Image 1: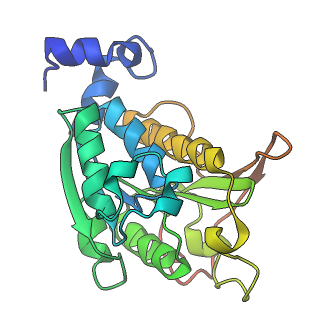
Image 2: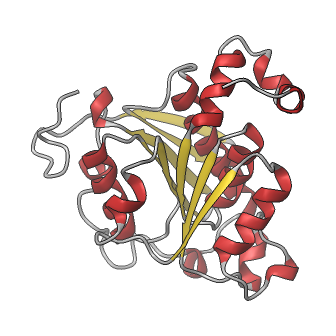
Length: 253
């Protein structure tokens, strides 16, 4: 899979990185990545995955662009108001990199369709805002042996981790087995969100996907990274698989 002269110029700053190089860029071009949610987290993740040259991006979202989204969902613009987010996001991705193949699924990912949407992917990114969706994504990723890059946001704080039991790390259910009690995890509409925080965490999610695909560095497997934008602080917590986990307990890794 030879890179064209145009691609060599486009990805030159990747190719000179010894951890990526030409072989890593070719792996990016051959990769398939699903992004669940084209909102606050999915927006920057999609922008940077497209710019990085990921060959196929599958965008999953059931929502339309609303004026309140534009404070943080930077893949959409004022002219996209009312449009399906998958269409708006796909149009923007295509304008960034015409080499990216786009697949869109306008609808909510659930346990009924998760396997079909994830099983043939190399990496899945979850930026959804539903606890039920997060568990459906996790279960499908574990079953397919696909690494899951998951991010979340709340007011001024964001989290990101890579859930990959096949590589010895926990799955999402090992850490978050039950839905939080009412009021403990309010939505962005209820609690607010600092817009630029979505860019920080979404970009980190894209970075983790790039590392997983190219084999560069050490992904956040078995580590939960927390970013506090209000105080400019970062901390990383070690995480472990739970032998009793009903999702990944029987997986070797």
